[in-house]
Length: 473
Image (cartoon, rainbow, N blue to C red; front, side, top):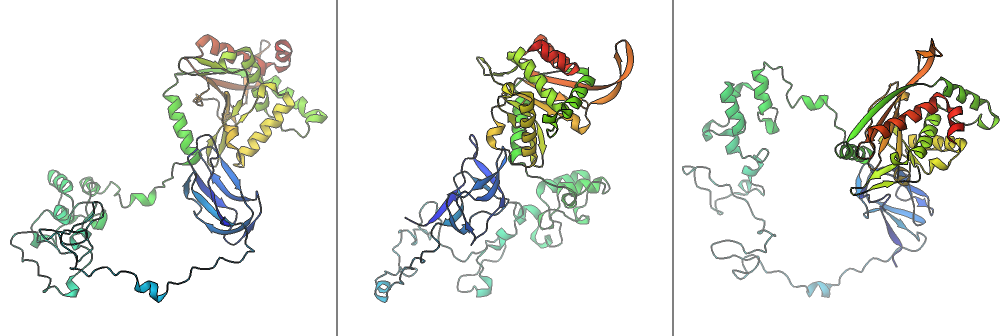
């Protein structure tokens, strides 16, 4: 059994086909231990660290950082027994063995019509797909009055080239004949441009000889002609790339884009808004922070919003469901997703069985979820199976929005910024802490009445969490 083992990129999630090498945590020649993290890989769902499958010495790294690797492809080789002597090299062939090797016949010694030999008509017989033998290329005359090509005996070594000069003068797959489109004797001083560009210049009355081309090999492009017509106001394609930035769409960002497009154009979205007074909720948070068991706990308004959603989902189970074509699948569990903005894009990890957690347990779960997401260490399993999502746009100072449903979910809540505003309270105008909620839902599952009642109950909970919890428990 070989002691050099190649570690292949595993499937890091459900159906993932590739991953990007973000950072190598080991180098060639380094000794690694079993389960030691060796590489950080970003998939379409998350960035994860992959541990070593064997202990030993790293002998080769197959892909650099930034490379995208298919699942199942080798990424690193490890010598599992580096202390063992190196395997002996194969002995060199003996003189007798070399003498027994049959030498291929010289050119011209192959019987006509055989593979590699001349065929009738001066052609070379070859296997389909393998092409003829490589030989000195000869340039064909372009016009009938051009001087005949020299015979092989007249060709000097300097005139023989392995690459056809005519092919090297092509630009973007167009030959020099097409680019110049004029008699051969005037081509040297003429502008280089494709026929469609020449026609555009003629139609617009532009003299191509006065332009400086920005295309391949200095050829004139359509943008160059248009810029001349506009008095040079248009930025040429040569100058534009220097002022542009191109960001590859891959990993988390690519998956998010695909999911949002699929959701936006498959589920009929409806969005409703509700502005509420959260003054009492903010006071409840202040009292929680004073309790001994809560002093080290991260408490924020998002905690009460999450609790309000969980309680409302229990009252209206149809909101916690999935459209499955011929049927609606209603879930009797709540995997509460929290949209999180990270350096690699938007991800939505979820708290499993959030409806079975106490308020303190929910606070701890949300804290761990956000911390893990910000550090880029969210596991793919934590981003699958969500049933309802909250997006907290308020942290960016936004009042509300019309969020797009995550695929497979029937509703999503946008939680806006909490602001001090004049509000009618007990018949008087007072300064209260007010926010706006935005609920988007799949109108195939949730009609206006159900969506309105669900959003109303969330608002009632946040307006008076203590009373609501007692009444609905």
